[in-house]
Amino acid sequence: MKYNFDEIIDRTKTESSKWDPATLREMFGEEDALPFWVADMDFKVAEPIIEALRKRVEHGIYGYSVRSDSYYQAIIDWTKRHFGWEIKREWIEYTPGIVPAVNYLVQALLRPGDKVLIQQPVYYPFKKSVENNGCHIVVNELKYNGDFYEIDFDDFEDKIKDPKVKMFILCSPHNPVSRVWTEEELRKMGEICLANDVIIISDEIHNDLVYSGNKHIMFGSLDDDLANISVTCTAPSKTFNLAGMQASNVIIPNRKMMLKYREQLERNNIGNQNPLSIVAVETAYREGEEWLEQLLQYLEGNIEFIKKYLAENLPKAKLVRPQATYLGWIDLREYESDGKKLEELVAKKGKVGFDGGSWFGLGGDGFLRINYACPRALLEEGLKRLRKAIVCKD
Ligand SMILES: Cc1ncc(COP(=O)(O)O)c(C=O)c1O
Image (cartoon, rainbow, N blue to C red; front, side, top):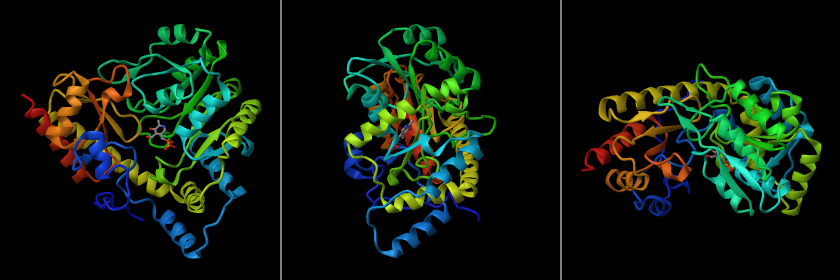
């Protein structure tokens, strides 16, 4: 079936966080800001998912539900088909989201006062997940070479060697800089962590959204030693636009680590999943491929559209080379390098809601993150508003 990603669907009356006027007012000071922030898509999900949900809704009873063997098999099969990694049923744990999972992992595997390495600019809830639980972040800042971002390995190793550093949270592919890490980079980070007894949490929520010419490698698939010190988190939420269904897969091959994690979930009575979510997840992994292929083509078209628009209208702005995710990282430092000023200007004068670069920590000032998983006409309007804000700056 051919999907129409150009269709504009009104989300304003669906309790969407991204489009909610009160939330927009709180985030951007403008309730009519056109939203390109929260990472979900303005596209309808794959038809088989809608069909399966319709059938389940019509059944009419939505009581406590369990995940079947077939649910887990769908995750196992997807992981093997797409990434060549053969995971076992007992390595997989359900958690309502990856951010909750990261919090539970910090609680289960660390003690207050321990340090956790992150690579800013990075998805900002990582910092919160560490600090909310009495631990401290250490930052290995990523380096921008004018085209894409790279890892400063000397700094990485120096920081990992601090005996207080017990965990590294890797974002793979990376949000917001849109890097797909190579096997060499992953192994190098892994070896340094292995040599220093540091656990790796690899957040791979964006791992299916990878563009031509790039190959995502799941961290736990590298080798048994690295699998043994790592937790790999995946989910259908970004891939299939199911974030509100609240389902993620936490993969822990190390049995001792898995037991600690499960104890933490039990202490909080986490584990029940709602019946619609169960149906949506299994159907997505079993029948979502056709939709995903078309989605990726459309997103590549949106990337080309952004590049062309910036070249013609904001020539001093640059889209950092997108390798994965539907989140574009735009360098606007030549127009305004003060992060807060840039963000206020764009929200107030442009009436458009992008994630501010400063939200992502070190190295984020002067950048904006645009969620381009939307119909092209909306994207064009967002870019026009960005241009208007920048042009009327002075
Ligand atoms: C890297 C990364 N991790 C986690 C999440 C959110 O995960 P969840 O909704 O499963 O908590 C996002 C959402 O944008 C993300 O970009």
